[in-house]
Image (cartoon, rainbow, N blue to C red; front, side, top):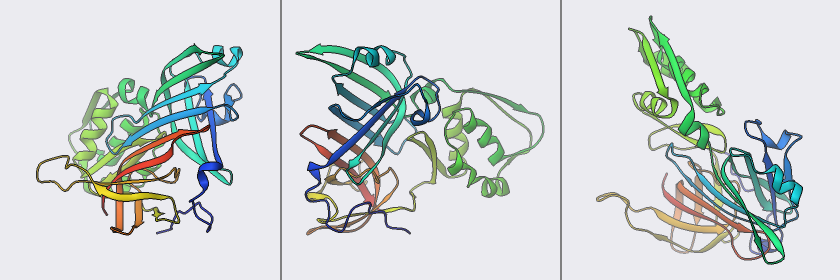
Amino acid sequence: MALSHGISEAGLGERLFDRRCRLVVAPPLSGYAGTDPRAIVIENLRVTFRIKKTRTPKPNAATITVNGLSDDSRALMQSKGARVILQAGYDDAMGTVFFGDSERIDHKHDGPEWVTKIEAKDAGRAYLNARVAETFAGSIPGGTAMLRVAQSLGLGIKALEAHVPTINASKSHANGWTAHGRAAPELTRLLKAVGLEWSAQDGDLIVWRKGEGLPDVVVLDEDHGLLGAPEYGTSEKKGKEPLLKLRSLLRYQLRIGSKVALKSRTISGTFMVEHLEHTGDTAAGPWFSDLEVKPA
């Protein structure tokens, strides 16, 4: 497993002072918004954000505010469903921390300048609106059926494609297969039958076996952004082990399902990210990644 540092050997201890951010907003259904010539690219204005991510199929949520947009930029950002990409990091490296669709964009005059608030969801439109209408009278391999449903979501499906040969070898619909309705719950049902789960993360459909995660590992210790002492929260369910809570300086490399190689004065080991929240302000204040992890 490759270790994903993305940080100089000097560590992250003083990195609150060289934070960088790029926000891209493009028309709806424009593919990867960063390559759309109609996109608005914001790099030198104050941007604040809070992004919450979980392991479930439900869409991840982002709230982003921008200070001082021009009249022309505000006018171009009125379309519901505008594509939103947020990249954050430091002077030497940035990475995507959110990619999704806007649900609401509001502009409010606050003192001498305009403040724009964007509320967006990762694959929110796909989760609620994507439909599937497929009927096969004869036998169809299980993996092929899953691909048909997944394609209707409009997400990147490479992670699912990697599982298809194994699924086809063990699962088929010998008496035909029919799916009509919302694609998201149908995909959940099909994957659950073969012990798999899915989640939309930054425009991609991520697939894993229950209890497993991604192969990448991010190091967290005092030299790589860890802040304070890890502590256990309240158990989500009776009889279930509580999740360990961590805070680091913002690390765009962290993803739901990724491993964390943790070394602190009280707890060390390898853990897997179950919940993740990025909070940032390019002018001042927070620039953190908050995690809830379980043993990997």
